[in-house]
Amino acid sequence: MLTEAEVDVVTATSPDYPDRLRRSLGEAAPPVLFLKGNRGLSDMPSVGFSGPRTPSEKALETTALC
Image (cartoon, rainbow, N blue to C red):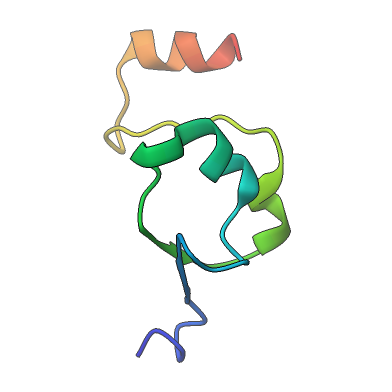
């Protein structure tokens, strides 16, 4: 099912695990990643946000500053 959806499963012991994530999180790094899309982006500097699909005005203002 994951293969059909073009989702890769990468464990922390795999050489394919993003080095940047491993270095920045250390022991707190997720043991398993489910990746879809351009895997080359996983080792590039980035910012992640999590929240509702209808963000508050404050959230929109904050993200606009990034």
